[in-house]
Structures are given as structure tokens and as C-alpha cells.
Length: 489
Image 1 (spheres, rainbow, N blue to C red):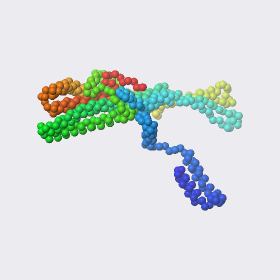
Image 2: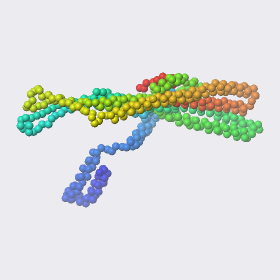
Image 3: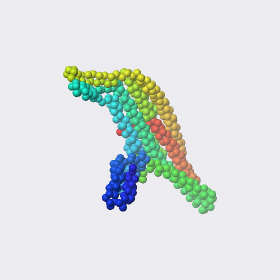
């Protein structure tokens, strides 16, 4: 019965007997049915509260975080609530990655699971050693009355099989390796996401700047066409086309600006900084940054085999299968089920010659663990083949991504070597022609627009190159110079 139902029952009974409550006899009759309800009420009040569902707990945590943010803003500490830190003036890619890893709740969860798996190693090994048992034989009353009591006490120990504790610990260590590999997967995903967002913001900044230059040139071109029409040197069609071209250039820059704000807010939020904070991202200029010096193919493949968590997972599965097979083989041979040392107390016992020794031998006649051993051997073969397949897949992915990165880098270098000098030369020649009045301003602005468009083309090639590098960094699982990644704290 719920508390609300009990209160409603009490109200109904009290209201129905209000007229007879003044009579002692009626009051006595009323007390009898009320006391069970009062007892039920006390039992319900002492009961444990109902557990919330998972969705309700999640909503409660979210509301608590929002309330903490609101309280911090009310105290004048906006941006410092919900685990956020003070916004730095400048932020590099490495600093953003470190801040995101420190704040990530996913990494904290994975590291807690890794610590739990590590704590189970000693627990599983200790679980093979059962506590000793003190056994006391029965004491019969007739023997006591006949003055011939018989009483025996003993200490029983169940010794573990040879290698059983080590096999159990090996199985637990394999779980630790799996948890460590899963943590590494989460770290790689987070680092790749943060670095991609950082590069995306820098690329979008350069792209917005180049598109603004194009739009400014087209606006000046539209002004020149308007001036020519005013002096009857141009047509209204030319003026309209120039105005339309300027409007299109303005709209072309709106989308990159919006994407830049979205990427910047996502980056700062992952780093634990207020997305509205004035933080300047410090990095190499996107258009003029030199290409990354990539390690040789074999060095990158070996680095990927050292860093990739899939390899660690496959190796952990091999170790787990071997440990399970060793544990199953350890129980297929006869072994002592217990050893008991005791002493028997009776009138016929000559002290101290009442010591007794008992032992039990387990004979694996019906359960030979053959099925478990076969399953462990099959698992070991499957895990070994999984490791071979993972090695081939990782090597193939590194080769494919390396080819893409080298091809994208070659396009950037070729464009810089061939197009940029031509763009610079065109700018110099346009300036000379304007000084000597060999071309008019409209044509000069058209050439200037082509120069800005070439810069936009270069940024698109750089974006493809940075994307290829990010994908290569993911498949390698660390730096692209073949070094091992920094040790995790």
C-alpha cells in the first residue's frame, strides 16, 4: 500500500466516524481498524526509496550541471562552471588535445574500467585459494550419558591445482590488456577529432580571408562598371552582371564563416573552455605551411603495428585463449580435493595420539574438461588468425593513406611551384600596366579577382592534404615521423 493510499484511507475513516468520535465506546470501535493502517504507514515510511531509471538519472545529472553553470554565471564566473577552466589567450593544437583528454568523461570512464580490470588480477588469483574450514564432528547425547563422549575437530584445507592461480591471473591480465586497448581507441578518436577541428578552423580562417578578398575585388569591379555606365562607356548588362558577381561572392563567404564558428565552438567545448571566449588559435599558416616530413613506408607500418589498439586487442585475445586453455588443462588430472588434520577426543584416546589425517582425491572421470580445452584451442587459433588479418589490414590501410597523403602533397607542391609564381608575376605586370595606362581599371580588377581565386584553389588543395594527413595519423596511431606516441599519464 502506498503512502497516499494510506492517508486517503485514514481521512475517509475519520470523516465517516466524526459523529461518533466523542463517544468512548465508538472511539474504541474506531481504534481497531485504524491501527493496521497506521502500522502499514510506518512500514512504508521505513521502506527503501525506489531507484531511479537510467534516463531519469541522466536527466538529473544534466540539470545539476546546468544549475551549476547558472549559479556560476550569477556569481560573475561565467565560463568556469561545469568543469570549465579559464579561457587562455592563445591555444595550440597540442594544448587543445591535452585539455580535451583531461576533461573527457569518456576517457575517465575507460581508465576507471582499466583500473577495475587491473584490480581483478590479484582478486582472481587469490580466489583460487579457498579459506580453510574448521570441522567439528557431532556429539551424541547417549554417549555423554554413558560417560563415553566422542568428539573430533579438524582443519580442512582445499589446495589449488598447480598453475591454477597463475592461469586465473593470466586471464585477468588479458582483460587488462583489452581494457587498455579500448582506452587507447578512445584516446585516438578524441585526439583525431580535436586536431581535425583545430586544422579546420585555421583552414576556414584562411578560406574566409581569401573569399573576402575575392568579394572585395568584385565589389570594386561593380563600382567601376557602374561608373562606366554613368559616362556611357558601358552597358547596363555589364553593370548588372558585375553586381550579381559581387553578391554571389558575398554569399560564397557566408557558408565558410558559419562552418568556422561551428568548428571553433566544438573545439573550445571539448577543451573545456567557454565557446564564446576570445581565444586565438596559434598554428602554422594554412597556405604557406611546409609539407610534413613523412617517415618511410616500412617505418610507418611498424609504428602502426606498435600503436594501433586493434593489434593489442588481438594479442590480448591470444593470451586470454592460452590462459583459459591452461586453466582447463590444469583441472583434467586427479588432484587433492581437500586435506584435513584433526584430533579425536574420547575416553579411549591416548593423549597425545589422537591426531587424524584425512584427504580426498578428485578423479575427473565424468567431466574431463575436454570440451573446454577444445574450445580454448579453437579460440587460440581464431585469435591467431585474427592477429594475422589485423596485421595485413593495418599495413594495407597505412599504404593506402600514405599514397593519398603523398599525392595530395604533390598537388600542393606543384600548385605552389607553378601557379603561385605566375600569380605573383601577374600582380606585378598589372601594377606596371596600370601605371603606364596600358589597361583600364576594369580589366585590372578582373585579373586581381583571378589572383584571389587562385589563392582559394590553393586552400582547397591544402584542405585535401590536411585531411589526408589526418587520416594517415589515425591509421598510424601516433606521430607521422615513425616515433612512438607520448606515454599516457
